[in-house]
Structure formats: C-alpha cells, structure tokens
Image 1 (cartoon, rainbow, N blue to C red):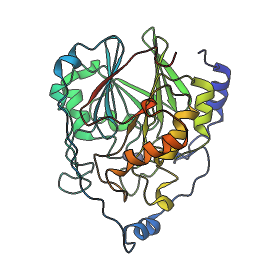
Image 2: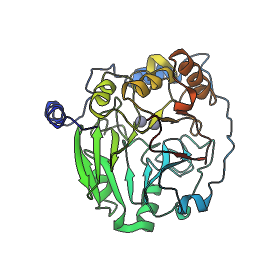
Image 3: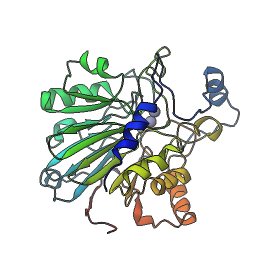
Image 4: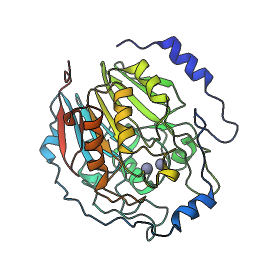
Length: 335
Ligand code: ZN
Ligand code: ZN
C-alpha cells in the first residue's frame, strides 16, 4: 500500500512542460475540423434512440446520515456524490439541462439530474477532470459556490485556476500530472494522467490540462478516471496505487471508433482499465445522460456485461448504477 514516491517524482519531472498547449503522454491521432465534419455528415449515421432512464429519488436520510463505509450516489453522467467517514465529495458536477455554452442549444439531458444543489448534503470537495461542458458546468459550479462558500474546495487540473478565480472561487488545489497535495492530516489527493483533450471554444484547445484523480483518505483509495481513451498510463497507475478500493470508469461516448477511440474508451477498454489499475470495485459512468456520440443510449451497459464475461471479471466488481441510486461499498471488499 505504500506509494513509490521516488518513481512518482520522476514521472512528474518527466511530463513535458506545456509551452502553450498540453499534450497526451502517448502520441494519439488528433482529429481536426475536417474529421469532425466527416463524422457528423457521414451517410447512414445512426441517431441514438432517446431512452429516458428511470430516475430513482435519492434517500435524503441516507445522504445526510451515511454509514462509515464508502457510499456512492450516481447523479448522472460523470457526476457522483462520494461519501466516506463524514466527508462528502462531488465528481464533475453537472446539474444543468444542457452540456453546452448555451441555454437553448447543445446536448440536452435525456435523464434529469438526480438532485438539485439545494438538496445536497454539505459538500467539502469537488474533483474536476477537465473543462468540457459535460464535466465543467458554469451554472452548477456557481450554485455550489453560492451555497457552500469558501469552505468548498475545488481540485482542478493545471490551467483552470483563472476560470475559477474569475467567478470568485479561490479555495483551489491546482495540480499537474503525478503531483499530489496533502489536504488535512489524513487525505492526499493525486492528479494523474488521462488520455483526452480539453477546450470550451474554437480557440482554447488543450490550453488547460485534463486528468484523472486519486484521493487517498486514511488508507482508502478512491479513483475518478474523468474522460479518457485507453493507454499504457493505466498500468503505471496500477503499479503505483493498486489496490484501489473504488474506481469510477467511463463506459460511454465511444462511437464511431475511428473518431472516438483515442479519447473515449469503449466498455472492453474500461474493463482493461479496471484490471490495470488494480481496482477491487469499479462503477460505470459517462453514459445514459447526454447524447454525445453515435452508440445507442442503452448499449454501453450491455457491451460492458459482455466484456466482463470475456475478460473473466465478475459483474459484481464493475457495477452499473441506476440514475439516482445509492450504493454502499464496505472498505474490506475483496480482502
Ligand atoms: Zn471530455
Ligand atoms: Zn465527457
């Protein structure tokens, strides 16, 4: 369980310093506007059937009086409420109707957010993986800041500080890949690589970093993969941090593969990540909420089930939650 600090420091030192644009650790094909149009205008392109998922009403009592074990509530897409020993964190909270810079156009929710900001228990920390609109939502961030004030801390990848400070948010932990910071006496948060990209406009591509996060609390390891394609980095993360008690791994937004594979894993690769990082328990995210890509809305969990069988991983080790569902994961799971 001890972390090889020397290796971690060497990896951090080896990250190429960004001149003006960040880049992935392994070279991946980057698709420009021409490829984007080729995808969007492709004949016979499937438009995914809209399936509104059944939304469970989170139990307010469970959220305000969680057990000491890790408790997880899926709020939709990559937004989760993670609770552990009296501490509450959110991942990439997006509660708005659209994942878009505009209120009236852009990808719309198929399934409503499971909670409003006003219904959340006190939140201590938010992990932000990158600045795409389906992960960093201005209205949600502002509401969270208004409700919880400076007590709420945002962990953000390098380059996003200015975006938050412009909105009056100063309780920030801004880190680059393989860097960590102690928060309080028993929590350490690690900013780890992911294979993806960033940008909120036509001009700011890759000017801010994208990442995954690992939060270690009193020996308990919680991993949030953010958005990512598959690469060798997950074996490295596993070598440094396995076993990981609970991991959130994306399973959606993968079609068409020729366009999406470098930046979004398909379910088979999500299972590879689960194995590479040494996760005892994983939970699927990034599906069933916004229509972003070409696969049918209900395909990712089916394809995940098949991949788990093919890779001999028990279905109970990689759970697919329902929108609004709360699950408790005992810390000694898999011991
Ligand atoms: Zn993204
Ligand atoms: Zn995304």
